[in-house]
Amino acid sequence: MSADAIRSGRTALGIELGSTRIKACLVDADDPAKVLAVGSHAWENRYEWGLWTYSLDEVWTGLQATYADLVADAQQRHGVAPETFGAIGVSAMMHGYLAFDEAGTLLVPFRTWRNTNTGPAAAELTDAFGVNIPLRWSIAHLHQAVVDAEPHVPDIRFVTTLAGFVHERLTGEKVLGVGDASGMFPIDSATSDYDAGMLARYDELAAGRLPVPHVSELLPRVLVAGASAGALTQDGAALLDPTGALRPGIPFCAPEGDAGTGMVATNAVAPRTGNVSAGTSIFAMVVLERPLERVHHELDLVTTPSGDAVAMVHCNNGASELAAWAGMFARFAAASGTPLADDAVYETLFREALEGEADAGGLLAYNHLAGEPIAGLTEGRPLFVRTPDSRFTLANAMRAQLYGVFGTLALGMRVLDDEGVGLDRMFAHGGMFRTAGVAQRFLAGALGAPVSVGDTASEGGAWGIAVLAAYLPHAGELSLAAYLEDRVFANAAIATAEPDPADVAGFAAYLDRYRAGLAVEVAAVTAL
Image (cartoon, rainbow, N blue to C red; front, side, top):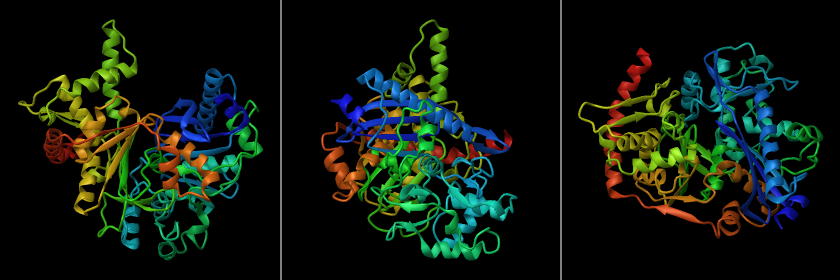
């Protein structure tokens, strides 16, 4: 049956360009919870000329390798290689800056979400708009280039995100899903489009300094979940699959950001629901019932793929430092003559963390490889800190490292608590939740709320964008929230961890030390 679905194209393909991996996920269009094949390719950002970037050549070689891996997986599992799909969706890490001229030539290297050089522009825009404009948003990058009078500014004719760029090359359509668009420019949830008042304010602010009268002329058209976003062109098919087997004409859903696909992957698109996505970065999304009362620099206002307002706590640093520690222990195991697979290393270390003290024994771990605006850091210095009377054990060290992944996130979530934002359920996804009951339990303690993990947690956003692609033919009859509840998650296996009172108290003590110890981080940035 699965082979027939693949052969006939009764499937949906999702591709997500994450920070360290490009992943593809093929699902049965009639049962999107059923994953038929997966593919992946590892890549890394580079720090060049003071900015974090990826080359566009790596985008295409990575996408082609990922697609080829998925085709090989389908062939191995089901004895058939796909040549067409019912629908395709593209997702990628949000924000950042990709600026093109009239001919579609990239004007400056891709500036990713990770860059923190946009402070003056973000501050000016926050004052002008009356809402928080984060450093990583596309409008902050564009305005910083305008403020700095960068030579490429007069030639700009199109600005987009990574997902928007890939989608445009595959379909010819300059569009963006509303969730991803909300990381470019503020969205009015009433219209599910860029906020008209703020567009006008920006036109006044940048008058005479932009190459066009209205900034909206530079931005992609905004689409909500379920809207048609074009079809795969002949050139696009050749870009994705140089073998020539992939047929053009396949419909596409709107390209989305990794925040939106994470919400879909965790069934967190309705008010009072939320999700946490942990990878190179870590962020929490909480769908709001009402507007926030005040502007908070810790919170971004974005949207679900359907356009509903969301409070987002975004941290530039996630599980990369934890992975570095795991890599060190993996090398120790190999050097000792007992090599372990990566998953076994994580399993061992995570299980050991469960034996640690609730407050991590007085140890502190900072995962700041890059700057962290919520913590007030323009640059990062990973640190592991203890006092002479801290209990320095492997169990406490690993618990501190896991707590450290959630540290900055917890600072932002405390702001939502102060706003009285209601939350009925929080879902988590990302590779660090594959070891059952560890990171999930510690996150529940950090948030003081139940945290659920589904059996799609490790597939993450690639599966989420595949689901959005599968939703295309159903958008006229069901809302996205109803589609997820009734058609996708109705029979999903979900494990929920309730917050343990000892973990809640222990993490609160850890967070107090974490907040106080940020002065050490500031000193490290200055001194090192």
